[in-house]
Structures are given as structure tokens and as C-alpha cells.
Image (cartoon, rainbow, N blue to C red; front, side, top):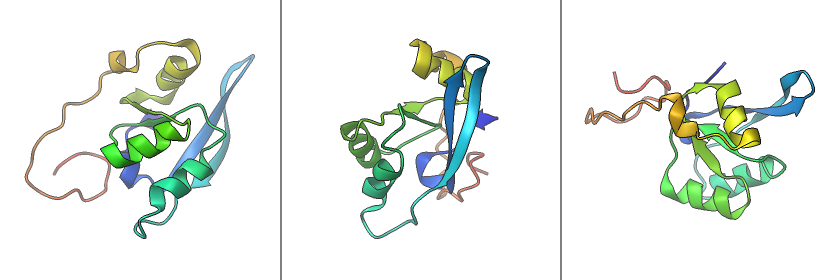
Length: 116
């Protein structure tokens, strides 16, 4: 499993936890519907019991709202387990190969695979 979605592209969020055997998927939660101006506040409420949210990118407004709510975005790309190690064990998520953003001059199509 990869952390490869921009926060605004995610339709759902997987909630992971740590167990003696490693990291385990606990549940999947649906993202709030886009628009309406309160999406990021609703997302902060949905994720309020989480330590962080792993994403490949995040805008300034949602970042600020999530951080203020105690759910900091961890910007990274790579295996979810690597991001979980960053969150639970204090490792640097930047070491996990975040792709460089390309300026393709096209709007995002929401596929999570970058500009096409």
C-alpha cells in the first residue's frame, strides 16, 4: 500500500494502528464531500482520533486546519508502513522519496498520478 494521494484527491482514508505484530489496518473512513467551505473542518473531525494523516501533498488551508486540530499532515510518498514508522517512531518522512512536483500547466485531474 502506498501513500500517493494529495489530500484533496482522497475519497477515503485508511486508519492504521500499531500492534505487537506490526502495523494493522483498523478501518477505512470516507472523506467529506468536496465544496461547501467546511470540508477541512469536517475532515479534521473525522480524523480527530488519529496521530497524523499521510499524504503526497496538501494545501496551506487544510494543513493549518488539520494541524490546529491535532492531526498534522505528513507529506511523503512511498509505502504506508514507512510513513507509519515516521509517525510512531519519529523517523523523517522526507527520506521516503517524495516526488518533485512538475508544473504541467494543466489542472489536476484527481488521478493521484501527477500531471499527464
